[in-house]
Length: 181
Image (tube, rainbow, N blue to C red; front, side, top):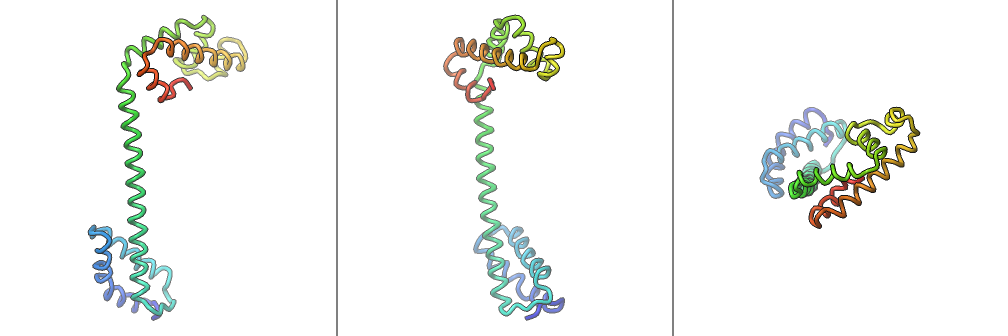
């Protein structure tokens, strides 16, 4: 059969409902079934107009089955990815909620206050004032490399201060959140 406007209309009228019933074996979501069958007929029209298809019924059934299987596979993958993402987000939120935020803030403030004066000033400009290393270097009239070194020292000393004073459960949560990177 050569696919043209007339034969396409005949094939559509003859097979649309039959193929929908066939796909009902794969899923009972009629809206998705109709969407898949519509895609099959759109593909038939766009890709095979003017071409001959010897076994149109076999072609339509195979195309519909393959598209439905692809759809179901993609839906399963999408659901699995969405479930994994939701689980990770839930774990993150639960982890953050397990921390006594006020205690952590006090501990962090004490750690920052324990830094040497120039190191503390550079840390505050970078983390609290949100200045870039280049901007800090200009403000303090020092090199960018010195700023980098001082920030590294500050982070190391803060990490040591907190780890030496935090309880074990808070420490494991903080490390899992990568707050010191």
